[in-house]
Amino acid sequence: MSTLTKDVLVEMIRDKVGYPVKEAKEILEIILEEIKLRLEDGKDVKISGFGKWTVKEKRARPGRNPHTGEKIEISARRVVTFHPSDKMRDQVNRNQSND
Image (spheres, rainbow, N blue to C red):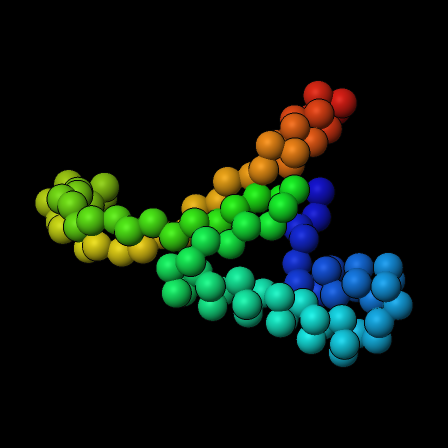
């Protein structure tokens, strides 16, 4: 199984829609950049039938270095989570059971 990369997506857009590679790449970059900008602003991104990305705030908390056992402070940060839509989850599970 190969990894789905930006280059593969560009080729798919080119093949399925007939756009030249340069235009297909620009379209993909615009979409990805818009998603990134929304997430940077702390906004959710929802694509119907696909899923939803959400930014969550994590508080600072105590932790431990797994190599040395030393106690450390894990700093506060934001994390992005993805939740697939019910439709996506059902489709993935349906395809899994066919293997």
